[in-house]
Image: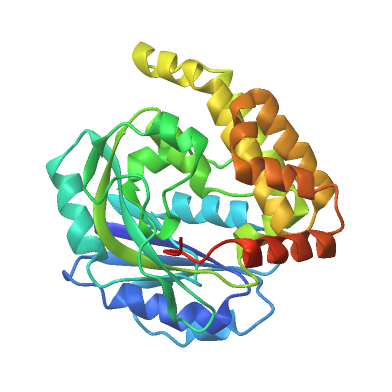
Length: 328
């Protein structure tokens, strides 16, 4: 069998209600490219398997787990089974805009030094309604080509469904280590250590935010924090192949750890996990003391010592006391 140009790897568990929307967005992409979809059914308890089997399109390949193996094992298996020159990884609650491949593949064909291409994303809710048109706050409204390792260590600003990368780039970081709570940031960092990236300033996918979202769950149970710190310690314990990149990484170490602990603290506070929020915000300040000058950080750190209803009442009262915008 000839290999397709693009392989889509889709781990499927618990998102049956969104699955058709995702599959149809792949099968109707512009460009008429030769593709395959590798759907890994991970013993989902909903109607996921029935939906997958209802498609007769030969481009859809099904891997069926009788027993749940988990997200990481499913992604590892899908990547190993992929045959395309380029590989895409998407969850079935997200979906593509029609131009996804037409805007990204020519860049990979034109620039052999680029290992990964990605773009902007819009946010949709559980019903598929767009709640945010664009998300990129990193590239000032322009395309970008270059190395992004240090910036990505501070924040994962690449949204997974917009990514397409060379198969050899994916496999250079394969397999995802056992016990890691996520795979997207892991691959982004591993690939950024060896390849240039290319950002396309166009919305290439729609990322769905809802109560059952994977990243929401791992933020609540602490597995995201443990995985992030393990990955940072791994990268900072190794030397980059380019000396100038290694030097930039080392110089940014304090900012990197501060940024990640700040992110943990904000998420824990949002989940009303005040003890964990206080621990992480305090650690962020230890790495970067100037954060105490940020009113948001100091306010939230103080708020972790208050019962949440008190904090909400104080915040509401302060908003009432603020003058209306434009008033004297």
